[in-house]
Length: 464
Image (cartoon, rainbow, N blue to C red; front, top):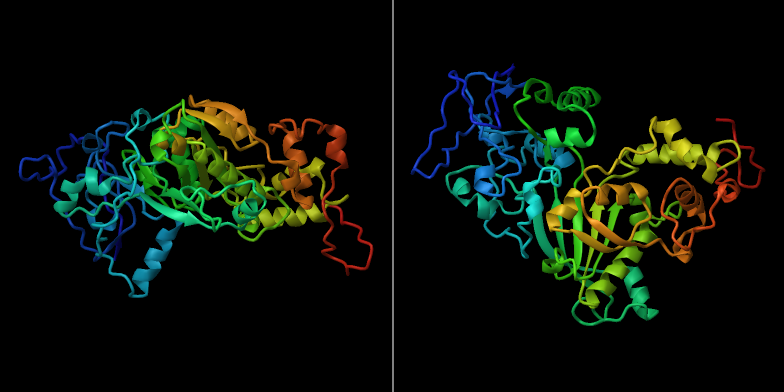
């Protein structure tokens, strides 16, 4: 049976006389969990209605108990204080697992052995919404900060997992063979493997601050997301009292070489790259862009920094195709190669806008949050040429000393179009690319693929 439930998930203590009061036990201030019976489907809920009493959230409070846990699981619908679901875009697979009879919807994870293997925070930035609004800074501390909630039977899920790993990249083995990298047995092994710490993070949005960063009202932000997702989340409209949203998007992974405890110390060298996902290049080595070579160069520099006693960070965001998706990206590739005159630096950005209606939807307004979660206040070596990333980071108060461009010898042949267009339109040129001008822009052409004609015929690209 499907119903429209008039429920409330207030993020502040309710004064509505129609609402039942939270039942507290043991005088510890922790409410008793109310377990939802999954015998009907609620299409949506509404503010200030009878029957529910969500846990309050005080976003930005430095004490996790006063801030309150993020409740976004199906077991506590009456006490839920967030819109959406855990696991980002993978939440759909959870539904499939239930439909297939492989997962009990009432299952509660066993988190006994899942606590972080190294310490992160707390940092002063954790209590400043202007610095962290897209991550739950306590997302890795569920078993510690909210132990009493778990003991009482609440289903609270971590949104951050912290672990360690050995990274085995062919480029690092090549760097060892070429003696650019020297194994030390601690950061870099003789095999070419590097030892790092890492954290996986799912997005948790505090909607008022997200709206502020995008220069719009919270109401308009909610309406825009609701409209452009074809009504996936009606509570964005019907529950303005719920300020937390777990969006169905990819998260990010942080890789750290060296001691994470040194990150907040401005006197200790910190090297950093913020990298946006590019499956074609990062995984399969496509040469139409600089993504993988820039990423592996950054990893090499991070290892060197860690060996000097500093720390290196790579933050890997799931923002495939400038957050437009891989299908859109490939459509843009076809447009670039088929346009009149062939693939050219002069029309690089125009092709994306012609297909997608916009050049880029990453925006970077939320990107610095991961740096603030780590306690970063100063980056000595920023391995990026992006003006958008640089401006977003420094606007939040983080200092950047050096901006490191990708070495010219690492730029693939077909990626000359990309690098030329980006530098001409504002990317930091450094010394390596300072001679790129309008003449160079119009001269730079990409590879012809002969999409529409046999390879031995002369191709006349069709008009757009």
